[in-house]
Amino acid sequence: MRIIVPLQGIVQGRGGLILGSLIPCALLYFFQFYLKRNRSSPPPDSPSASTANLPELTGIPRNSSRTSLPTRGSIRPAPVSSRATAIARASDSAYYTGWKKWLEDPYHPTSNPDGIIQLGLSENHLSLDLIEEWLAANLQKSLLGEKRGDLSICGLATYEPLGGLMDFKMAMAGFMSKIMRGSVSFNPAQIILTAGATPAIEALSFCLADPGNAFLVPSPYYPGFDRDIKLRTGIELIPVHCRSSNNFSLSIAALEREYKQAKKRGIKVRAVLLSNPSNPVGNILHRETLYDLLSFVTDKNLHLISDEVYAGSTYGTEEYASIAELLDTGVFDNSRVHIIYGLSKDLSLPGFRVGAIYSYNENVFAAVSKLTRFCSISLPTQHLLVSMLSDTKFIEEYLKVNRERLAQMHALFVEGLKQLGVECFKSSGGFYCWVDMSKFLKSYSVKGELELWENILNVAKVVLTPGASCHCIEPGWFRCCFTTVTERDVPLVMNRISKVLKDHKASH
Image 1 (cartoon, rainbow, N blue to C red):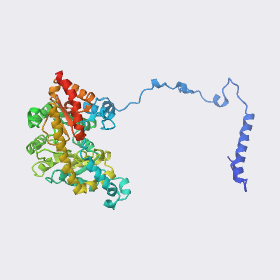
Image 2 (cartoon, rainbow, N blue to C red):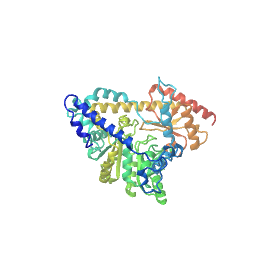
Image 3 (cartoon, rainbow, N blue to C red):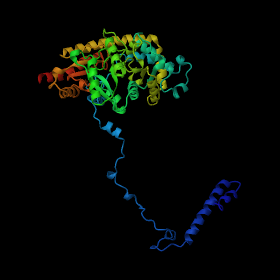
Image 4 (cartoon, helix red, strand yellow):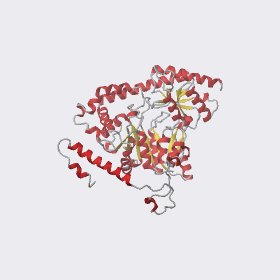
């Protein structure tokens, strides 16, 4: 470089740039050619001078060929964690199996009329037209237009407070109060927002119990709880069985019995988890039962988790009461009570992924606030829903019409099933009928229940949720969601199911 580089500066003037580059390259090429011609080659059998003087290296294997690499069949897979292995190998309940099968062949009245009809997924399609109309009229101005004049693209594309915007918390608090028909007020400062009710209940469970601890859960219970809570926290769920002879009502005596049994086995019970309205039964807990529950958890020094995601989806004559309403009396310790809520059910927006934890416990609030790093809601979603929830006229109309449609479709399904000889439990909330098909079982057992479920799925091509997935102690009960189809589809659903039931009844 000391010889060649200066030559680039010798050639100046027109064409200097080109020649200044070519001349050094040419000189370098001839210099290398000269060295090659005048270098003496070592004899073929003797090592080169450079390697002859190197000390002998022992113990270091040398591979000069790629042919010595291991073959594809002999390569061992890189290991994953024992936690991942356990989750991957765990078998799915019928609840998830039916869901997967439906995804492969979903029913559509025109494009796939012979497909599988989904009655296992608790989703409300009855009032989506109202949501669609509001979005069509307000989407753009809710995000960047006149309704959000102070908002720019930076307000949508930047990081946000992980636990949710205060504007959205205030809107959620107002909506929750409206759902409870003004019977209770919610403090926005005690709300933590998450990307759906599932991460809400998982994060809350993570803060209330350690691996190996347990929650008492009145059963039948929502089959998703087994994944939502147990999968990553290591918390056990102990079913507290409720029976048809008692209208599937929660018994404090049954809670006491399961608590003592767990204690004998060395299991620490940390909380009672309940759904109100119940999922899958659809009944509503009376105030007296809620008072008894609060007394029970206080006596045992436990937490109480109240899942109230269906609070606004009631259609019966029974009056609904949130656990928050009882806490306003000041009689009980608020710090042990936590409410789970979301917009997937009451506002028909499961795809928006909005959940909430309402907690009176400062330590839980502080811990969950940090965990929302893993499950925060997108800013555009929050800003959009602030506008929607603040539209008082729309929200009041939506809740009124939605309740009317729920009641109408519920009555239609109950009557249709009754024509097939299937009785439904008298429910007052939720998107489902809790139906008794026990007389159609070939054997009164879980095996007989799953056999009927498989025939309804594979022959009738209708997805139901078997009671076994809900930890129901009595075989033959099924959850049947009526909000995923239209009124025009009901005769088709009944016709498909009837063919399977006739076959089972004939062979009974």
